[in-house]
Image 1: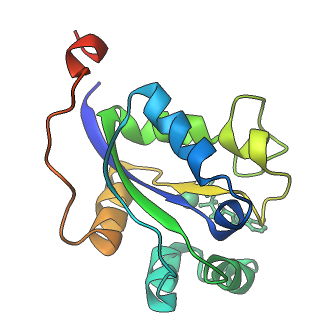
Image 2 (image 1 turned 45 degrees about the vertical axis):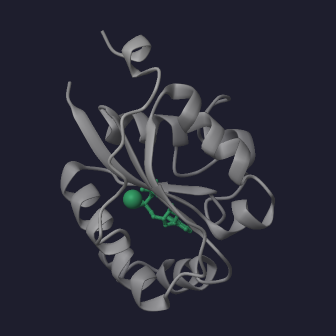
Length: 150
Ligand code: DAT
Ligand code: MG
């Protein structure tokens, strides 16, 4: 167990469907600390780099088209085991393969419109945080942390 920082991104479908608040609430409720967050039209080159590992996959062109179709909300999130915890909050890649309580299950129906992204390892988190937040995040002491951590 360790304090980790991870990269999370609310995808264009969720922004268009007005789900940003409901999704951010899941992370806040868990006690994860938001260290950076913005809403922006993503730079296509950034999306291409972000999903470079999937470049050879048949779904890659459609993925890039979808991810550049509208604003996204990139976030820097910190907490105990934040990488795995964020992935657990998100749920299965295919929204209907997961279970109730997972963000993707609760809000989505199709693998090509699956609401949210989260880094899958420490290496990926470092790469994605560097790509989306080269200036880092906010350093601040959060009221209430003494009731969240022993
Ligand atoms: P995850 O986002 O759960 O880490 P991934 O890294 O395997 O999943 O894939 C990245 C994204 O690509 C995923 O969130 C949605 C899309 N994707 C993956 N497999 C797909 C498929 N078979 N058809 C359409 N889109 C797919
Ligand atoms: Mg992935």
